[in-house]
Image (cartoon, rainbow, N blue to C red; front, side):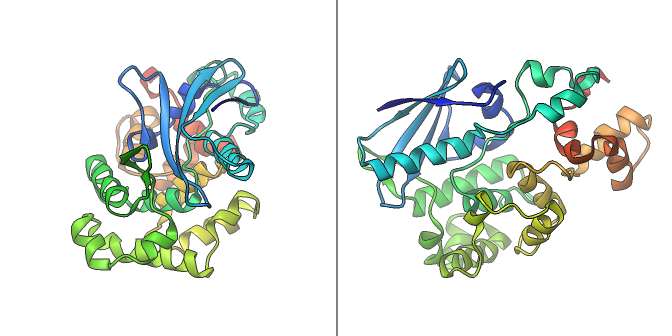
Length: 292
């Protein structure tokens, strides 16, 4: 089943895919020739499908691996639009960035959208799994969750979706800790899954409920395992660029760019991008550090 997904222009599927490392984490997959993006999705009905996205003028082409009922198709199309931020309006950012040589590439290359998972729950879990570890460690932990708890694609049982909150809510914390190698993150992931399943939190409501950014940040910080850096990353995934995900790399780059390599702190990073206002996070994310 093939469909065309219309996007607000400018749009580049490649730029969305390469926006951050999510495309390297299961159940995403990119072939060797990087011609497409695949994602295994479990629908509300329990049906598991493979989505394949390809570049197209004015948007993206979507191939769905299975025939499906209209209600399932509607869910797939909504998920695809969410994952690729098809309707996200970056015109205000492009307007103020066009005269900054370090950001001149942003509109030309249709950059600024950030690849999302189909559910906010998956994005939050993956973000927790990026903390205090190497990228290789994150990939191993995500793979462990998908392989142990994810629902399989009927036509290829080796391919599995990311586990739903209800699936992970039944997990044993020691299995998460030892078999999936989550370590100290295991109880955070389990509690998140259980609260989402019991309705004590509703992460998916954030797709349609749009609280002010400070309130949204407060909600994210209330989740165990989410600190300032993780919250800023999640805010950008949610299309809020008011905060900068400050880590050692940010401190190093800002130090080299504006402080002659001298040691700096968070305040200097914030000050460097303060003029970008609500777009400060994406201005930092897309800054051409190589031109320093």
